Amino acid sequence: MTNHGDYSAEARTAAEDKARAADVFADHADVIVAALPDVPDGHVLVAVVDSTHQFAGTHHVPKDEIVARVPELEGDGWAMVFATASDVAGVRRRTDEMASLARRRAEMITRIRTRRS
Image (cartoon, rainbow, N blue to C red; front, side, top):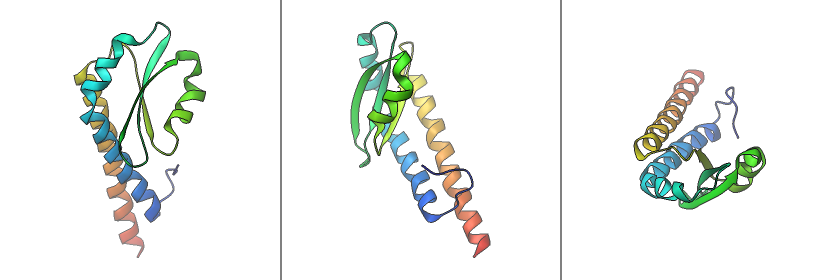
């Protein structure tokens, strides 16, 4: 994971990859929302995109295990947590924001690296 002070080429690539992952989540918004009715009480739905930018499915995770389970499910990819009240528009709104922030970070890194060279 990169931090806010990392303006390396790797950090730029990580931001671009995160934006691509957000697009994959958005492409699967219908699948994510379709899985929500099966989520048991006290759980959330965790959707995963793997490191090759493939949708890797959804998982039911107890709310009190989110901190431990989400990183396990995410691995080298990305995960998003959804409450059972989520709808397609809400999923797409969140994924759009995730993509926008990641793309802005990549652009900022490019500007900083250009000024420094």
